[in-house]
Amino acid sequence: MTPPNPGEDDVMMPQRIHLQYETCLFNSTSLIGCQVRRDPEGSTERYTRWINNISQDQLSTQVYTSHGPTVIMPTWFCSRDWFQRVGTFDEGGKGVPEDLLWFYQSVGQGGGVVRVDQCLLVYRYHQQAATHSVLEETIWNLRVAFLQERVINQWESFTIWNAGKQGRKLYRCLSSSNQKKVRAFCDVDENKINKGFYTYEESKERPKPQIPVLHYRDASPPYIICVKLDMTGGVFEENLKSLHLEEGVDYYHFN
Image (cartoon, rainbow, N blue to C red; front, side):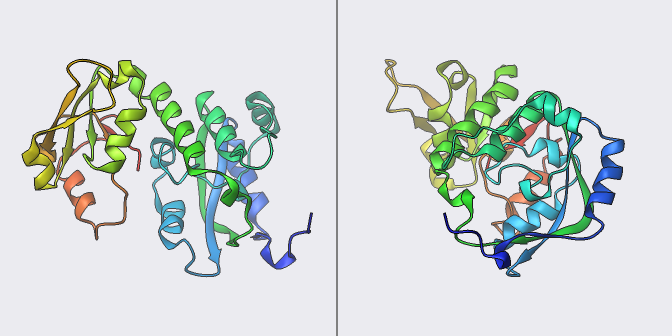
């Protein structure tokens, strides 16, 4: 295997270990991350904003998004005791998202997620990164399983926010018992709303399930939100804010 180019390695700031160690002393069962600076500057701009700017509470509530771990693996710091309790990494090889799997195991065992709000790492982007070898469908299936285990299995009913491709895909990938919990889809697209319902054509049930499609103002929480953040010039975020809901109680992002 060709050794990595030294210019492609991430670079940590001199104070990183000291600051993360101090934070760990008060968060011994948490995974500690930090803010980062991307190199080349401007690469994965939306992702980098998310890494650096979601709130401390959202580090725990937004663990189901397509971005993956809410603190990125190159910034991880935790106590040896916590690492040993969670367990070792899955060394299945190329195509195994070992960081996501370990992150889910940590959260699943009650571990916290904390970020030191200082830039302590230069996070380098390059095409040879191992993350590019992981199939999107592999990530998707792990995310759906984790969402069902941690959230949907505990709910009696819920609404999927997005009657488009992503929302329908989530519905189709749910267990049959959780599909029955979906009371409605909601959206802002008048064409979808005017149609009135989504028919699950792949279902073996007779008649085939038809799930109502509502305007988001007419729908009821809790929601699983399948709308990407930071993509609508703030329109979606304002719509969500107008409902005065609590993230982690009334809704979770699965974008």
